[in-house]
Each structure stands twice: as structure tokens, then as C-alpha cells.
Length: 454
Image (cartoon, rainbow, N blue to C red; front, top):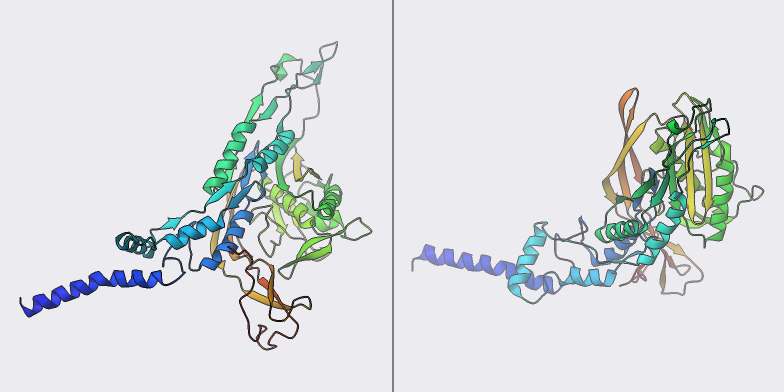
């Protein structure tokens, strides 16, 4: 055998053994396969599963029904990720013990061809409860027209509506299992059987038109927060936005004080969830902003939250702080708009009524960037020396491009805005005197109790 041939065979042997060497090295770690993706995003560390699972469960499912939009979180609808099962599947890739299978899978992962899906469990009872509550808002019987003894029209006929409960529940459960972001629910029109032509026309004021409607969910078990929602909604209800005029949320709702009836409830302060007077009012502002945004109103002043909200999609939320941070909306139409708002039975609802619906709105959002979260250490006298406690789960930061297309008499207009949601730190509490004053970290940090252990 010639020397060049021997060299070629030796190189071929080394190349054949290299993947086996990488496979053997992978077996000695507890890391995911290099290049592995989970739900469309790279997964570099197994301990990142907990925060990513929380973010998935807290993501709203945008639900449209009869032209109204609702944004309950996946968790509120009964979706839970089987974190342990997902972790087992992640760690099993490349570790079956069959060299050929493992090398093939590791190569596919390295080239970005392996994208695992979460293992999702859905409790149908939560979805059924949501559908039942929504049906109470939508369902209405048909109403025939009424005439008086002289044949004059007293009341126009009106069609009824019925939410198809079984199909709606099936669609929600399927969307949760498939990880979808938005769905539409089926609503059947119930004809009245009587048209306007069936009665003699009379002069009457036109019925107001619902220009837009948006609803968000909250937990009635959080009584103080639910109370604050009700107080703010009552203050907003009945507000009038004049033609070409404006509405200031702070001016309409007023100060969030004890004298106004507000209580202590959860608020976000410096990226941390704490108790504060008037907690929950931002959900009222967010629901108003979403309705106005989808109605085609002009948004004059708007500040997004410092972290994604579980009750509404990113891009539709709004934060308000008395008296400096406001939500200001402008009515671009030549007729007034009336705001109807109420909070009851776990639903925060805002409706806008006017003479017409001049604009058709399409919107979408795109996540441009994500930003990793960090650790923030806080000294706490209740924590024993040598121990660390996680008091707040982290959330990744997002840079979102929000786009709105307005179709109206003046043509088509595209609006785009970038919204940043900074990452929420994981807060780790340690014993007093533990932190280094220069670094803000423990002098001899041990492993923190995980926020979501597997």
C-alpha cells in the first residue's frame, strides 16, 4: 500500500472517529445538545427551562369573538407545561446509548434542524369556565320589531347571537396545545325574522354603533385589586370624547387615593411586584387603550409596562401613574364617542360607542430582540446566614415592533412603533452583611434556590 493511500485512510479514520469523540464528550455533560431549539428558540442551558416555561404560560391567547378581543393568559385558560417531561426529552437527545442514532441527532441539532415542542397539559375546566363567562356577554335572543296601533315603528327588530360553546372550547384547548397566539370563536346569528321594511318607517334617532370593544381577565380572588378595578372602571364609565377632542385617563379617573376608595394591591415598582395604593388601575387603562387602538383612535400619550402583562398582549398594554404618567387618546372623527366600562365576574370590559365605524384596523407585532435577565441580590433579615431565597421569578426583556394599518375614507395609513419591555431581574434574598458593597453580589455565593425547580 502506497504511503499517500495510508495517509488518506488514516485521515478518513480520524474523521469517522471525531463525531464519536464529540458524542462521548456530550454524554459527560448535563447540557442540551449544541444548537438544540425549543419552541423555535435556542436552548443553551437546562436551568433556563423554568423561566421560559413561566413566560410561555403567562403569554396571552388573543381571542376574538363577535368583533371583540379578549386576552387571557394561557395559564388562566388551564394550560400548564410539563416541565419535567420536557426536561427529560431535552436531555435524552443525543444520549440514547445508540452511537449512530445519537451522532445523527447531535449533528441535526448542531445544524439547527431539531426544534422540540413543549409538553403541554390542558385542564379543560378552565377553558370551559372562560367560554361560559364569554357566552353570558354574547348570547342574546332575537328581538322582533314592534309597532303601535297606528302602524308606527316603536322598536326596530334586532338579530340575536349565540356563542357555540362546545366548538369554542375545542378551539381554545387545541390552540393551547399547539402553542398558537390568536384564534376566533364561532358566533351564530339568530335572525329576528322581521326586517325594518316590515313596519312603516318613522323618524327616529339612529342607534349608537359599537366602534370597538376589548375585554381582559382578572382573578376575583384578589379582592383588593378587583375592588380597585371596579372603582376606576366606574370613574371611566360614561366618559365622552368630543369630535376631534381628547380624553385623558388621569383627568377622567382622578387621583388613586384612599379618599377615592382605592386599596393596597399589587403594582410594579422598579421592576419588582410590590403592594401599592391603587394596584390594578393599569389594567383599566390597558383595556381602554386596546379598545381605542383597535377602534382607530389616535394615541397621543402612551407608556407601555416595564414588563409583559399576563392579561393583555404586548403592544396593547398601557401604564398610568398619577399624576405624571398618563394615557391620552384623541378622537379623529366628526362625531362624539361614549366610553362604557365595567369590571365584574373576572372581566374588565371597555366599549366605545359612536355614530359610525369609519376605520378598519389591522395590527400585528414582531419581537425584534430578546434580552436576558439578571440577578439582583437583596439583604433580608429573615434569611438565615448561608442561605439564599428567590423571591421573584425572572422574565426576559423584549423589543417589540408594533404595526397598525388604518383603512378609512382618507385611504390607508401604516403606523409603526418600537416598544421595549426591559428584563425583570430574578430577586435573590440573602442574610444581612452578605453582599459585597462593590459588586452587589454575595462574597461567597452558593447556589440559589431555583425559582422553578425541576
